[in-house]
Image (cartoon, rainbow, N blue to C red; front, side, top):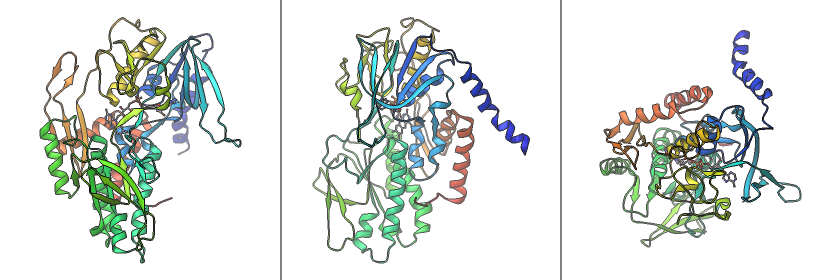
Length: 459
Ligand SMILES: Cc1cc2nc3c(=O)[nH]c(=O)nc-3n(C[C@H](O)[C@H](O)[C@H](O)COP(=O)(O)OP(=O)(O)OC[C@H]3O[C@@H](n4cnc5c(N)ncnc54)[C@H](O)[C@@H]3O)c2cc1C
């Protein structure tokens, strides 16, 4: 037992040795903004000797494709994140927000994220020789009234998933109280999911599994009051997928009694009171004039730039994404500033806002920064691996119709649906895990939730 403990410490010891032998001060100073798919993968792909400085309000990377699973407890939160300080290439990490960039003086103005006693955040600057912007995006509320209120949940960060999970359990506990009226039970247990993209559909599927396998057995009297509604402003769910797969998911959702409303938008959210309600209530006003009372709304309907990206005096696309050339260099700052991931777009070859795009861009820029190739040796070419989603009940979809380079050669791999696609989804995302710890934890939690159910303790 004792010797096993020593063995477990070996990776940590090796890491600390690497850290202590760094001599980075004389080297070019690289600054990376963001620790998402772009920033984290860049830091991971750079060698240890890099003078790398990372700035981000999150000190960890979130494996976003598995985030909907944590919102219901199929997986636990810590199993899908990686702390950025564990990466040997990271010389300095500042848990702070970049506020603006002085491109002439090559300085990033930052603001810390902590609550100070004088209610003022402290500012500091970080200079750079080379800068990589990987700021990501935030959820777009399209200025819909009251969506930014505490009654509506987003699904982008781990703390969002934790809030959704706690809220779901809270709604069931309140509905189970003896004084809760029938009408209020119905409202509390009404879940509205806004947006018909892969994130919303995966969350709707996870929620359905959670409701039908765990909550309905733990709260047997409440089953008849539960309702899940998915609202999409466009004509169909799962826009990026081939139509046969979209129809398959639509049929699955109908069978599961998920109320799917396409061509319908949420125009506002209103807070109201009713005499027979013990709690302040919320309802969604829909574009077709309907009113939908709900207990939980999860909004995952669009993307918009974060404040820092907005503030940068750079050329941007109509959607506010930073324009780059085909080498991912920011227009007007070639050779010193690159932009990757969701916050950026190539002027001539626009690509979708996807994890696989951000990851490949990060690896491309890492080669340039580490000197493995020159900054204009070869253009960035995206290689699409296809699109996949888990749709609950041990089923998934995989669309391989556009595998390859969307601006070059594309192959047509078979489409898959059902159990096989779900196994492919789980295997692919398990294989993509960075740390050995998460490679162990994830299958353990999958087994635990399948064999013993999801945990519904709220704390
Ligand atoms: C729930 C969910 C599921 C998804 N599933 C898939 C999927 O299955 N497949 C797929 O391809 N894509 C998926 N995506 C999309 C994918 O996550 C994004 O395309 C990807 O995260 C983009 O990477 P990024 O590095 O550009 O941005 P992000 O990963 O969002 O990272 C942005 C980083 O910037 C930081 N940041 C923000 N503001 C500042 C600031 N002012 N200063 C410094 N740092 C800042 C953030 O904290 C974060 O660390 C999913 C997204 C979500 C939300």
